[in-house]
Length: 153
Image 1 (cartoon, rainbow, N blue to C red):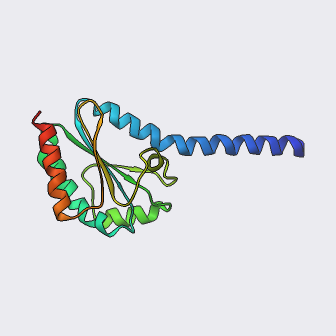
Image 2: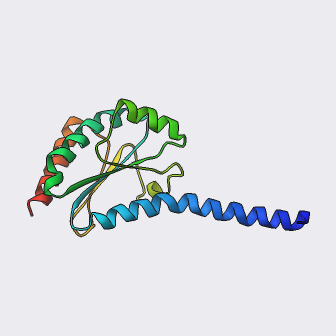
Image 3: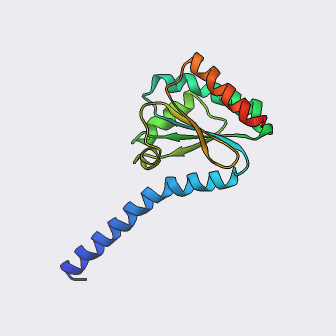
């Protein structure tokens, strides 16, 4: 292969790889959403450096355990650029729900995040019913009420 051909090959190769890394979290997310069609979905964006995220994980685990049989599914999306940071966070704060790794923030851009953590509650038709920024005990009570209202509809 001549140098010019090699350069063209490498440019095309890296463009393809770049597209695959962007497509991977989107494809995984869309796959989960399609599997959860008909369920209430709580989507949570988090990162290892986010203090309130530490508090949200036990709450999400409890919600998943308590309401999964009624149709609640939780999908969390990690935005750390270094996967080892996410893995370290999860070793201290285990998740009993789905975790998607999005180091490029592709899904975060799609959802126009305004802060961390950010969450979205989807109804059984996958419509975004509410969006939230932050996590406190008071906010978690509001999120809980919204989820219960949707589960009992």
